[in-house]
Image 1 (cartoon, rainbow, N blue to C red):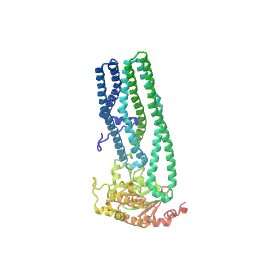
Image 2: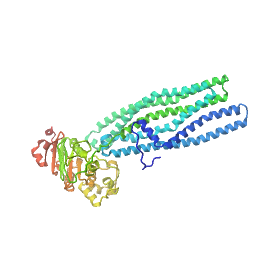
Image 3: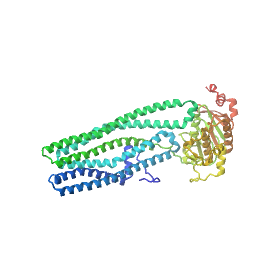
Image 4: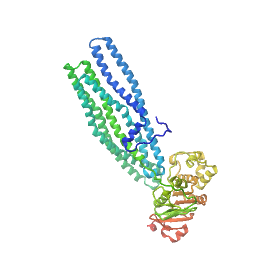
Length: 572
């Protein structure tokens, strides 16, 4: 089975079927062993009726007790050996499924890491969660076809060959009847794929809603929007339930036909064999053997239907995984180095220029416009932005990430103790962060009270996304983490939006001191922060409308004055 640190290989992302075949090819020895064990197990199941027929015809009917004892012993030996084979088959197939499960998890996690910051811009969190929770297990289960599926084919051919020696008529009925059963179930499997695809898509949407609801429940309560989100969630869950009923309806038909049709077929073949026995065309032992052969075939046919069902669901899940694996991070065609000296960042689309060594604030009535500017100058979205006059897409992306840090106010916080949350790379291949640097960053972000108020200080455990802290505390923790990175250029999106006025003023003052002489740009409409900025850039409809100090813009720009005064009527 794949090791936790082993390279999972390069998946085949040309389609769902290709991906499933890649999982089989990744473990050829185990797959072949599963097929051989499954085939031998099913063939020996078919050997039981043959041995019973011999015991009746050569031992019981003529009264030869020694022959009867010999055939009975053979039955016991074959049954015991087949029981051991069944155990080994099950163990092997479990390993096959687990390897496929873990290998898929590794390639999905590896892809998420490769996408990095582009992940949230390429797909939703609900999609990734749905893949990890449901699709991975469904794909692994689909590989059942490697063992019992191949074994069912071999058993079918073996039984057909045995029936030829008994009665060509019965052999013809079996050879034609079993494929007919599979053909009858086929359309339902096609319908199942369509219904399952729609169900999985809706499940991803609903999972995303759950994640959003869990993360913003406190805010929704404060704004009175909980009922609106609850109604939307109710509608989506109803749609998902309806689609689930559709999947269940098709599944019930598949499973019912998978059991019912082989049983009906068994009755028909048994009736034909009984007539042949009554006419003297076959012996009583052969009648018993025919019944046993066809009864054995019920298993392979059920396996075929089950494998078809699992494969239909597995292909749907594999397509979702393949779609995720096909996502590409931001293309890096850069060949040039980053500027050696502090230089200006310029965004032609908005007209914004962020000068080096200064604290620049971007203000707009639409926060999404200023956030988009920082996205472009940090090269997280395609743009024509330049650094020192050089287009960003001509500079090597690793160098951009080394010099420019975009600190999102909703950046993820992983579970762990507080020290690891704010300094995740401490001692992990990077330079260890000193106690003084850590204390300075905590002080600059006005987060002293957070560390002091927790039972174990910096060693206190944090929930995922630091949900055991308030929104303002989480925002300051994110700011501490950004300051500890100490980038040449720090771009911060609304770093103080969840803070009270007193704390916000302290953060603005200390942030300017901590970043003295370094390039810092942030988006805000808070007058407490804007007043401490060296330069304020006022944007209207995503374009630079005016620039200057906070006091200068208050004097000459009515729109800016209305924005920072929260005068909605004037802004309109």
